[in-house]
Amino acid sequence: MSTVILPSAMPVDRKARVAGFLYVICIVCGFCAEACVRNKLVAYDDAGFTARNIIASPSLYRLGFLADLVSFTTGILIAVIFYDLFKSVSRPVARTSLVFAIVSNTVSIAASIFCFAPIHILSGAGYLKSFDPNQLQSLALLSLKLYQFGFVLNLGLFSIDCFATGYLIFRSTFLPRFLGILLIIGAFCYLTNSVAYFLPPKLLPDLFPWIYLPSLLAEVSLALWLLVAGVNVEKWRAVQQARAG
Image 1 (cartoon, one colour):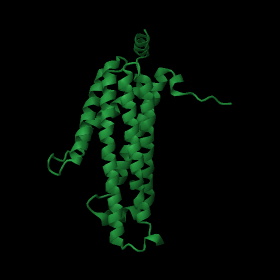
Image 2 (image 1 turned 180 degrees about the horizontal axis):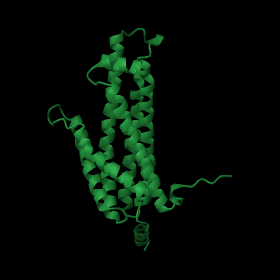
Image 3 (image 1 turned 45 degrees about the horizontal axis):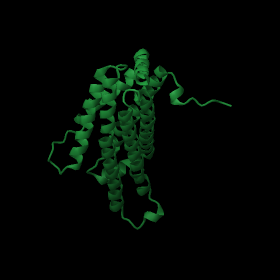
Image 4 (image 1 turned 90 degrees about the horizontal axis):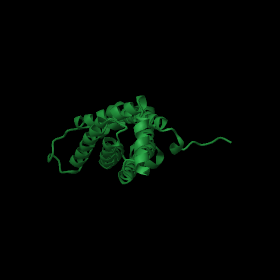
């Protein structure tokens, strides 16, 4: 019988590198789904253009949907490993980070139903014959806008996770403090963009996509550091022993 190795049973350095590897997958899949699929196929102010693109490239659109699911699922796995890594620094803050990571990614997984819906809405199936083509195109775009709403909500919730994780990294001693500072700045950018989305138009300037650049830098830096350098095992053990003592 094979033995299942739980995250807590892994050596801490391997655990950190697994988290880094999953983080790279999460970032690459999320970036590809947005930049390589939706940015090419979707225009949020043009229902006809969006519908024609989805009908012409259904396989590419489906790949973007699958990439999103991989990104959100790996986000949950990363949160579980991070909790195990950082709970000795501050268990309440680590729990807060874990809860907001799980909730935010679950929101996006649920919202993905709206992202996939245009494939069915524009399929030309018989049960849709009561709608004219313009109505179907509008319904498909509405579905994508609802997905966008869910994703922005996800990032607002995820910003709390980033604040908490940045704090834990800054306090940890077994990871460089600059990574924690970068992540806190990135969290502020995520939160600012989400707040701006829900405010009345023109109350805040449109900072998309530039507002995400500090967040991307922070997450890429953390992912690559964990993957390449891992954590300082001696300092991690010292934190563990200090808490146990």
